[in-house]
Length: 264
Image (cartoon, rainbow, N blue to C red):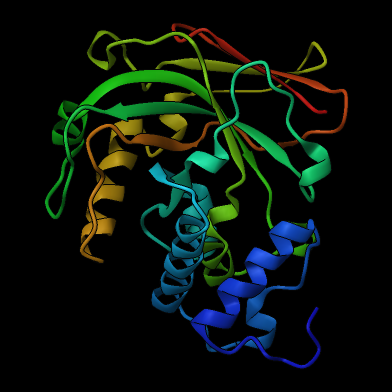
């Protein structure tokens, strides 16, 4: 932790979070040093952090949603999911081990993934209009890696940290979402062959399209939209599990195939 309490503005907060990521060193929450940090300002920190990544050569390729379950939202005192950004630097190709040596304390969670066919901009987006903008649906796995000690943070802290973004993997099975009942799409999560959790798409706001609509409307409040061709991680279906070197984690879906990741 920076005991000199220098994190007091958007620029310094983004710099500290990027430094923690680069050095694979966790830290105490930003709000320990900047207790006035509110949600709107935290999104400014997030925007600065992503702008710095883009300036270093990364490209925005999509959006991720966090806190998509209603129970988690109630615990954090919010009414819609968090939004954060995906860059091409976060893409992990299928079969490539998770680089645990470059991460702090990675966890893995299975996701239903959308690829957008049309631009989706709020306000007023419904689940039906959101779904009409989706081109394809895939299985996916997100690797989250909070820059905070023990994954402990306030809501503004996690927003500033781009919702613990790190890496993501997309499966090889592409489906038309109109052919599936995504609320009933089931996923079984295994670690080294042992089932550790399971869920259906209903875990994400009742239906992933509901989460997508809420994200589009929330982004509209900041003058932003979800662009055609972008990837959208709709939120973790199960609790996240830690990934350790040598462990194999498999997310097996009913209709979307399976995604396997291994800790390096």
